[in-house]
Every structure is written in C-alpha cells, then in structure tokens.
Image (cartoon, rainbow, N blue to C red; front, top):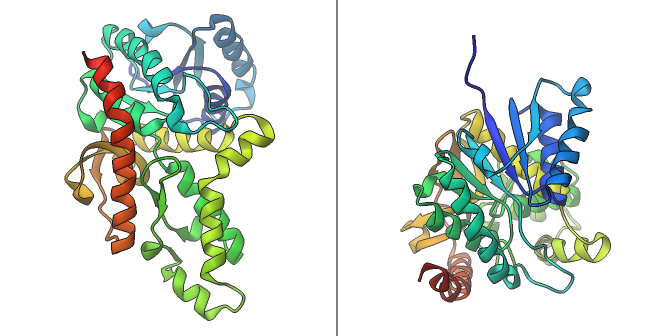
Length: 319
C-alpha cells in the first residue's frame, strides 16, 4: 500500500494561485494539493470548485483548504501570496510590501516543520526568493524563484510567431532580473540548432530591428497585459506547473529560474534568472551560458540594480 504521496501546499489563492491550482489539476501533476490563504473562505471555495472538476481530471488529486501548519509534510510550498503589481508600478516597487508579508508567512511555514522546497512566484521574485532563503534557513538549492521562466516562454512564443515555427522548437533564454533590466541571450538563440542570426540572413524580410522589438514586447508584456486586464496569471501559472512537474518527477530539466549564484557569471550572493537544472532536490546546478561582452555587461547591470534595491530593505528585516 502506498502511504507516501506528492504533496504541494499553495500559499495564496488570488489570480496566480488559483490559475496554478487549476492548471495543476488539469495536468495531474500531484496527488495532494492544500490551498492556504488569509481569506479562508476564498481558499475553501476554490477547493470546493476544483474538486467538482475531478471527474474530468486525468488523475486523482486530493484537494483541500488548510493552514500553514499543513505545510509540515509538503514536498513543495508554492508562494503566490502578496500585493499585486498595479498599473504604472514596477515589480521592484513591490519589494517592501511583499518582504513584510513574506517574513511572517515563511516563519509560520518553518515552524510547522517544513523541510521541502520553496517555489516563489510573487514579485519582485528575485528579491523575494533571496528573502525566503534568508528567512527559512534552507539550503540555497531548495529555494527557487520562477525567475525568467515566463519571459523565456514569451520570447520563444514571439520568435516562433515571427518565423512561423513551433515555439517548442525555438531555443533561447531571457536572463537577469524578472523585470526592466532583463536581457535576451541572442548569442545562444536558435531554431532547430540553426542560430537566429542565420535565420534572418537566409530569409528575406527578417531583420535584427524587428527582433529587438520582439524583445521589447517580451520585457514590457506584463505592463501591456495589466493595462488591458488588470493582472497577468495564466502564463505564469503554466510556468509554475512546469517547474512543479520538473521537481516532483525528478526530471533534471533546464529551466530559467531565479537561482542563487555563487561565482557563476562572475556574481555572488544573489538570486537572479538563469538557466538551471531542476530536479527533486531543487536546483542541481546553474547552467553558465557563454555570454558575449555586451550580454555580460547587461547581466552585471541587472545584478547591480537588484542588489541596490534589495540590500537596504533586507537589512531592515534582518536587524
């Protein structure tokens, strides 16, 4: 008889959290999902609603609402709680509000006896992932942020649309801060093994100016979506489910997450979006791309911006 099942605890059942739970149920990734929110009626309602869809799901999932104490035996705690990004507000503007929220949440989760993996999605995700690592005391590889997984997906989709190829055959990365200082790694981007630069040369009508505009649309996508519908949630929910699958199924998949750097890319003591091998233990290793001079300069600037924003706020909470 199987006594041990995969268990995911979701903290925050707002737009992102509830979309994640719905996508998780549809893909049958975990055997148990507990929903936790300061608004208990909301999490209870979501649990009821999701359970009513079980007859149509690919596999059995136990879904219920609970409290931070129920994280004790969870394999994965997914953090989507916190203040949302408002129109005209950058992700970095959210830092003080959400670090204050996370300080209390992580303390309660760790007091439950939790000893699994944290997956952070709340913005500013790189800074909050670092904060969760500090607040929790867990090893760095077991605290992961969603990083630039969504930006990379947007990049692949728009490039696939531009060249009229399946985005699953487009290989490229957005790295750096999940925000205004992120950058595309054009030097490593390819379609079916052929560098993007060669695609533009051999196909008339394609040029680098239009590719640069594609990146600008990737970088600014959240602002555009927030302006139209108030929030972004479907894309990041799918990205979180992809990460959940890679973790629970020990896939050793390469995904652009917010991972801790300890010398990689010439940087230390920072969580930031980079490709990394993800498995049941969290981040197995950071994949170090060969960046050209301009890419390395932009990446270093992204690190600098994050550190300058993060240091005074975290110092306040560590006193």
